Length: 368
Figure (cartoon, rainbow, N blue to C red):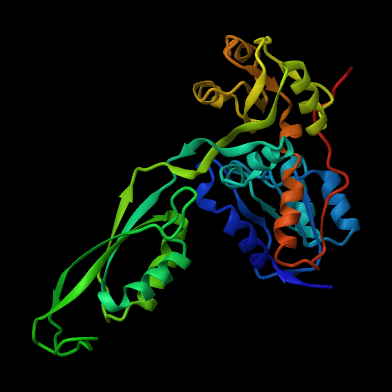
């Protein structure tokens, strides 16, 4: 049986779903527990409930990974009178840690929205509304003979990714000058004498969560004692991160056929939808959970249908027959997060004991 530290399991998730992509109001990462604790069994769930916790206790689980965090706002009292604090107390008593990956998992290309898109076999899927997640431009100055070595190091650390391309950069040549004092140990040139060196300026894009690693790679691979570099904050949208997904069906479907397919693929007991448009369904937009705020983006990008959950009454008027709006349910659209956690950890540790909890259920009941 393999035992792994919680921080190492968290690292696997966060490499794919960085905390930098989480919404400001969210609460992601380790919520209860010790990052250095080793665990040999993990359960995954959509929500942290008493049923899930009891299952974890019975199975001697050391960590529960959920999509929805058990804590969102401030907690001022910890008593058994409140469900959240009662569950936290019970988890601590049984030495069970709690971890959540929520909007950071929602907001990545390949995240939960793309997991659902794959169930529909959507083609050419892309982020519906790219985010303004902080991006930087790094400019560094390298002696020409070392350009390839340094460039390779910063690319491998995460610089230079633009859309579906990597190793993207712009370079220009010039002459750098410097003069080392008596305490310096210059790579080229002489102490107390100005030196001129042919150099290349390399410019690359770096996402916020990879900036630290890229700078370290630059410093470790650069031959100079004091490498020169600039960091600029950009306002560019990150096309690989954001809300929702949009793509095309392999074959167009009539609206009623698409509703039947949606009900089947999302294992939904019931669907709510806006008025039929009379058009075939080809272009599909999806936002798991509560995503009605993306309806204008779905319409503007020519979607024939928009699938989400938690749609309010008046929002069903908004499509105005421009597309078909489907409320498939919050739970129904997000339930597949549980399998993703298993898959992402199993991809690194195939023999590790992690499984989807058996007792998780939709808190919403349906009378049909």
